[in-house]
Length: 215
Image (cartoon, rainbow, N blue to C red; front, side, top):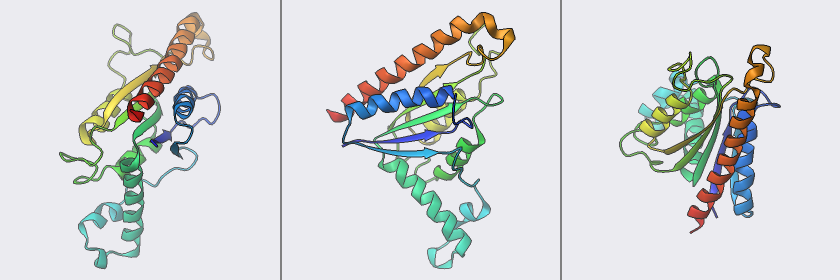
């Protein structure tokens, strides 16, 4: 029985492309694993605290000498690390805000990356298949005016793959603002095509991953 860790980070509860595409992945996953387990965190609706001094120093302090604040911070980081370690696959929905990821997702990363455990050379989560669903209001493809300004997927590939050692695959939907920004009206067809491709890729990825983990 495989376990999927599913994280949403869009501030929008409705109308979020990243949430919708991630939901397509999850439904396809659950169809393959009707008896499986999904651990879900909505990081926007229930934000985690940002990393604190207590959270950092707790890992360098003997348990018997930790303050109550340090112990609470340590327990939270341990809980998040165990969720990640226990998952067979990870799904992260991450829209791009101001060229980067939502702060709610950054808070999760800062809490869950524990050097010497989940992070670093001998990461306890190395090789775990991770699907990142990202959405962008415009296009940042080669040749576009904002080529080189995309720091959401590129950042996540580096931190998830480089620090945690996860096996990262990115699914992206672009031009998501085409239907709401008049100046982008001419890009609606491209936007719809990109969204459809993202949904198809999410379903395909979920099914293939589920089959692989069930083998």
